[in-house]
Length: 206
Image 1: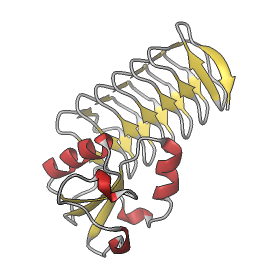
Image 2 (image 1 turned 90 degrees about the vertical axis):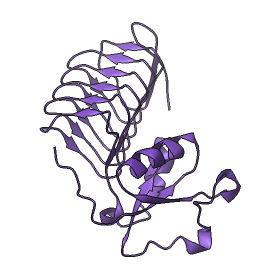
Image 3 (image 1 turned 120 degrees about the vertical axis):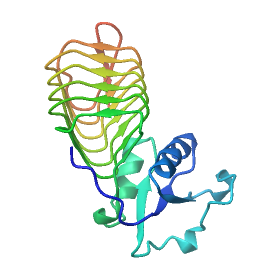
Image 4 (image 1 turned 60 degrees about the horizontal axis):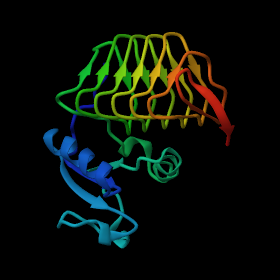
C-alpha cells in the first residue's frame, strides 16, 4: 500500500462537524498540527479555527475535506490543488500492503482493507467497515460504519453505503447509489438507485 510520507506537518481540515473532529483526531495521532475551517465558524467550538478570509493554502500546508456528504465533498475538493491533499488512516485500522488508497481518503478505526483493494480519492471508510479482497471503490464513496463489502465488489463514484449494509461477492454497484442501512445486496445495482431491505430492492432513482 502506498502511504504518503508526512513532509508537511500543518493540516487544514474543511468541515468541523462530528466527522471533522474524528478526522482531526486521526490527523493529530499521525503527527499533524490541525486547524479547522467551516463556512459557519460558529460551529467550531475550540481555538483551532481560521476565518474564511484566511483560507489561503500556504506552500507548507496540507488540506483535508471532512464533509460526509459525497457531492459537497467533491465540490469542495475540486477547489484546491490535488497535491495539497493527504490520505489519513487510524492506527487501529488494518490495511493490506497490497491495497491502494487515494488522496483525500480517510480510513477510520477498526476498518479492514484487504489484499488487492483499490480505493479512489476522497472516500470515507467509516468505523468498523470491512472491504474484502479485490474490491474497487471509485472516487467520493462513503462506506458507513460496520458495512461489509465481500470480495470483488465494485462501487461507482459518489455512492453511499449505509451502516451495517452487506454487499455479497462479485456485485457491481453503480454511480451515485444510496444503499440503506442494514441492506443486503445480492444483485447488481444501476446508477442513481436507492436500495433498501434484505434482499435489497430498488425503491427509487434520483
